[in-house]
Image 1: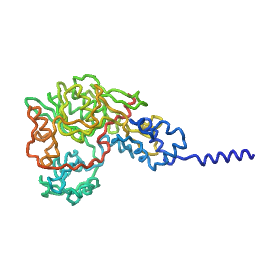
Image 2: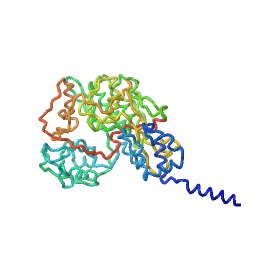
Image 3: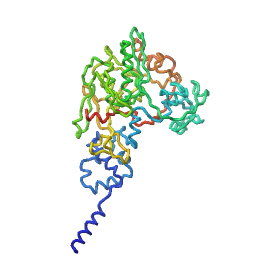
Image 4: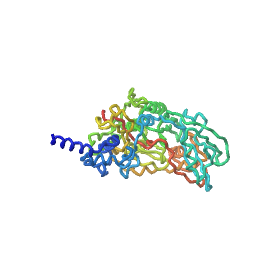
Length: 472
């Protein structure tokens, strides 16, 4: 009896000393990152031996008060793009262009050498609160909620852009003469990324197709294909692809777009994904194709379509900016072994890597939402692969320099609608087709761009693959 008592006492002491995992989600964060993260082998805290001793491992995980703080600690110093997801349902909606927003994209500029700062509107989403209130590309705003922006207060004033309801004051082109005020409230907007398709019938005797494409959203694959049906029917001989506010999106959709642009590529290799050594079995090319998948807003496949592919496009003009990233840069990189790709505008972001969504689903190696832990909606979007073109090129980590430099923001007081032949960046590309050197259409005054993060979506510079990639 004494021996049994001592044995039970001994077991009780061990149980008392056994650490308890305070936040079980932390275990998911570490395990999934250890499995998939692109830089797993270079992050000491992700070493495979880290969880060999359960006591030490749990003590380590318990030192982080939130899953997000653990996730951030595991990121490589070179990683600017991985993020933690609090609600993967809302995130999936944003991936497909649905989010709560005013529906306009601002850019900030200092007015000459004054202390005043203004917003010029780069883009307005169709049927958004801003669109319905009459906001237009090129409109100039100098005050939010009654406070005029200056060099000393613009960061604080600009917080009004993120509020539920705000009042915006519009000015004339001088950035100071008051015109009117408009108050709008944020609403859920589903933004079709195929913003504009147009054909110029006679640019140096050629038909030139022009498309403004603002995001590689797979639920709009059919809309993109329909736009290229229009260009194909018109018999365009040159193509201008406007990706100035396109931060990326679906890798698969990028391959479809490349297929639409260059029929002569047949079924050749467009790009290749390379994962860490734990998942090298998934290293796989994307090919130019003749068929695309159509998806619903929930990401589920609903149909297939024959791709409308253009023939005879030997040079692609890409209009780019400091917001052009990821799957947009994949188009430039993937097509350059096949045709001349001419970048017009400013330097791109430089994102030659991509991500997947990882869920708390150990049974699927964290890739399947259908088997995810139902007690929470947290997930992660870490960088898990590098992207290469047919020639193995992956050399744009610092961005693509423009072949023709033209800075839209310097012309903030004369921003014309997308598709206007005199819109400064488009005109530069069309003039190159005409054989004319790039010249400003009017005097460029002395201005200063104000760099401020105006994105409410972390994924705006993203390139991702969906879980069906692993089942193809």
